[in-house]
Image 1 (cartoon, one colour):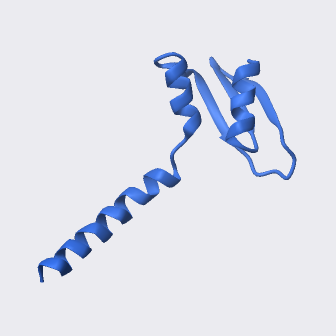
Image 2: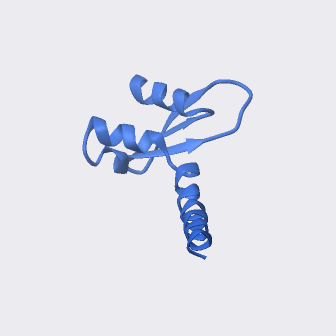
Length: 80
């Protein structure tokens, strides 16, 4: 019974933590390492595309960076 409860606990923990890893945005973390609060100044948009690209735009007082991969978005931040 104790092993059964342990397995249930591990399964539930895994199910709760899994979405946070899938939805994690590495760009937000990178921006925060560059300057605390910098991630609040940018809007990051990940778009599916067979072609590599990044675009810089502005929405109000925020910089919008679009790209088809996080690498291309990071390149856009570097270019900015």
